[in-house]
Image 1 (cartoon, helix red, strand yellow):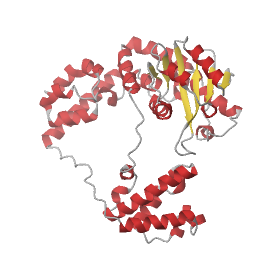
Image 2 (cartoon, helix red, strand yellow):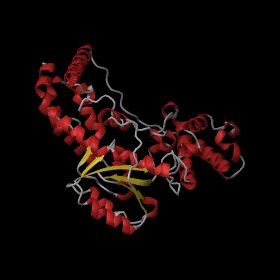
Image 3 (tube, rainbow, N blue to C red):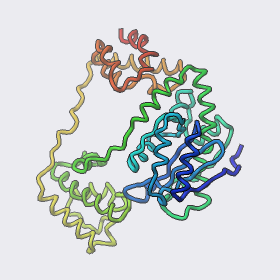
Image 4 (cartoon, rainbow, N blue to C red):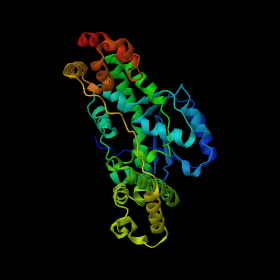
Length: 375
């Protein structure tokens, strides 16, 4: 069935509207949540729209028009209201980063679908396979600049669709999980999600995680750091993502060869002798004069012995067999990092089951089987 039905939408732009919504939502038992940000167009990114769906209506909160978002924060942390979210990780980080909001009683439909044995768990796939509704997602709107105002009717409908079907998807998945006896599994996974927080990168070491820096020697890294820091400040000044200012490939090229003719760098062609071109030249000079940056890096993992390698292959087969019997992905059965540690130290199972990566439901479901696989 093609999605053509009109979704009841209310756009909220005032403090009074938001306060009224807070009262309405406090009486709901289930709400659906999504956010739209401007990460592809502005820097640093910000949440531009929050979509909240109930069984009757979708409320679109224009966060750029509002200063006090407390009413929404109160609803989000209310454990008496189930928050249905598709792929909750990103939204949880965004809401924490911008307002310090924490969310309680999350039901992530993508996680739930995986535990229900659903192979395609994107929103469009779930609406089609579980509800028989086909929704056409417009990539142009998906990648659009959500900080632009006014929002078009097309954009509002697109945003509303992202939450309108989530309560119905929740109902279907909840029944399936209950029948499979896996409701507690999903509940634990979602509880772990709720603990996620937005952690800003360390400004002194963030450059070490940039793509391509592993190819550079110590002196080139010193130059790269200068360019990276310049790009960061310029991106904030322009309110544009860093790659719009200078691509990572350009940073690596300039750091590898500081004598590069800047006219070869596409993003500098319009400003070779201008303000930013001068700043790039200054960063290159300073980077060349800086001491080389030597980093210890990650300690290379010791190669496994043939016995350990054979044990790991056996544990992988065990994990795959368990996954096949449950019709879920192997990665859900047991963490690979834990299997690798067990392959090296098979006698450490009692310690391993207490590691942070291993879930309670995994211990209850698989501990006995895993013990046999290790024996």
